[in-house]
Image (cartoon, rainbow, N blue to C red; front, side, top):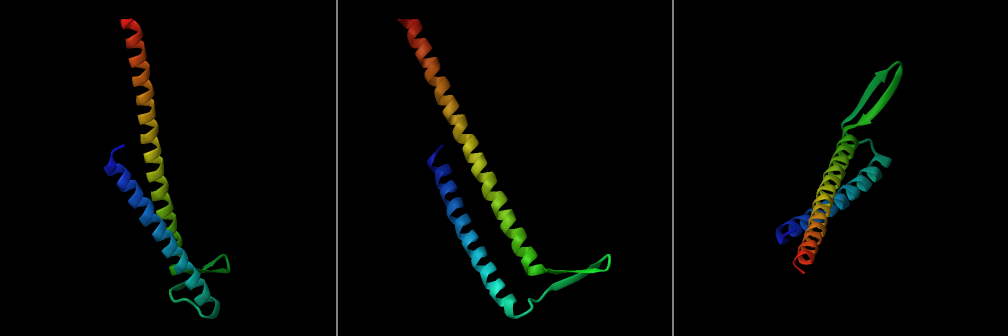
Length: 105
């Protein structure tokens, strides 16, 4: 893992955490606002005689938070797999080096 990959991973984690904080603060503010007022962009759908109410702000917030989580999770898994590959290579190289040194003795 080179310094560029490490820097990219650190920056991804840093900005990802800030986005999570920002989305959480936005969710709190929306919740406080919706306690006293009706949020705009509310959609009502009638299904089998039951009215289902959705708010597009909450749906957008949920989708963006889920998307961010999935992106950060994928990045974490990619970096973990890369790191484990490096560990395997080092272990194999050590084993090959050890067996070559024993063959020379």
